[in-house]
Length: 450
Image 1 (cartoon, rainbow, N blue to C red):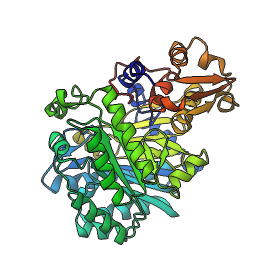
Image 2: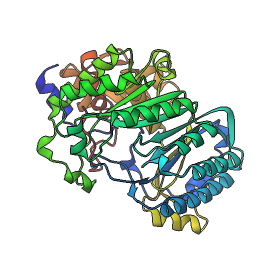
Image 3: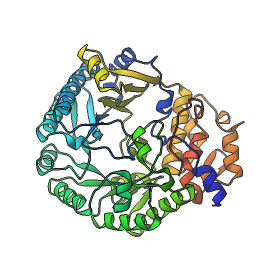
């Protein structure tokens, strides 16, 4: 792939496509009433996933793009968890108190900022409000720097089977540039503790495109991380959006790698992980060959949601907490972002839905196409449109963006089957954008494609 194409598509700012449409299309016209109306039917649609957003950290990492609040005190976290329990009750009541739960994911922020007893109480509230399946999976995002032994014990006692640890980079120069100092030994202790508590699947998050990051530092980070043998890796490109995340202005932009360097870093990370025995999954995930994620990829059963690539096959996701996004068969619902407004709505006995989006049949078809492209690097448009009431012509005819990708050799089309060329797979988000009817119409800033 030429440097010109890497620069052209690597510098393009496109969504990560963890949903379609993306949150940029959400509207305040969809609110609590629509959410309540759709929750009433959620149990009949099969088992659901639950996402709980814990928007607190002890310190700010300069690269962070999450909705989070920095606090050194425990009281704000405890108060927030009390409000979240009330939200759980409101959702459970609206859904009829008999919703089957297959997966739970705690995200943030830093969920492990909770006290062990607070985490146990929150799990107890979930289990009393919903009907957990016998083998329901529960995952927690963890900052190894603040993980303590009592919290590890609480995770084990509550049946946590998956943990995702932020690593980003082990290079001390890079760590200093993003204000996140984390030693290999801290990460090693966290992994050992989680393993002893019965956590069977561990994921490491790595990031490329960080300030002062080099190909060699990426190689060294992967080799160190692979020594700990996590089941999975998620590898993300740093999204520099200082207009939206003001703390990112603390990063020296001159020290950020360009599109070509980012691509080199991404590819060397992928090469090192594959050399270490990990299978590449979709755009940016890696898993050991016997991991469920790898099996799903081989069986063309891989899915994509707000956590990235996943084996989660639920059609509904209940989002709990400030800024959390839920997905129902009818569409998306997002809670208020400000903590005070979130708590105020719940205090009035109202679900804190700020905005959302109700899906049309065309949206659902485009979502299926984009998901398959993101997961399989190809999509059978005829098969995906079967029964939708649409033919495939409107997806490809007069699609200038798709035509340009074909002319550049990024994709090929044979009949109704579109395939991303193997050497251009890192550009798959740009290909997905060709089927996004809303891309470019909202003025929203996205991350770079590579």
